[in-house]
Image (cartoon, rainbow, N blue to C red):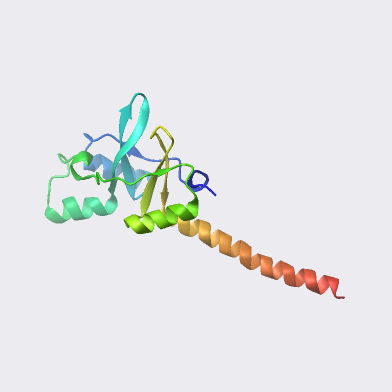
Length: 149
């Protein structure tokens, strides 16, 4: 299964020059823990950074900085790791682990934003797969009982 099948496609995006106050408002409004910072390149939205709720706390609030003037471009993680939409889910898990990231923007062949996959998305997928496997065991038992009567 590719990450494009699992990723969240409704991503909250911002431009570098928007304030972190707006980022916090959007995170609250949309019940998310991050916003992706994008640039338009030839009409394509390309992810260039990410700001998380943790960034807001650690980089701004804990230091007592003015949240009305600091922009998402000032505090965004610029070394952004992305994955192609064709990457397999398990390959993405290994990649996220090797880069120690909880969120991975998904891009198409042109670098355009497709979505984002998070640790939460992957845990939910794995839980569903495990549930399906555990149901299979029960179905097999019932099948055996029916055939041996």
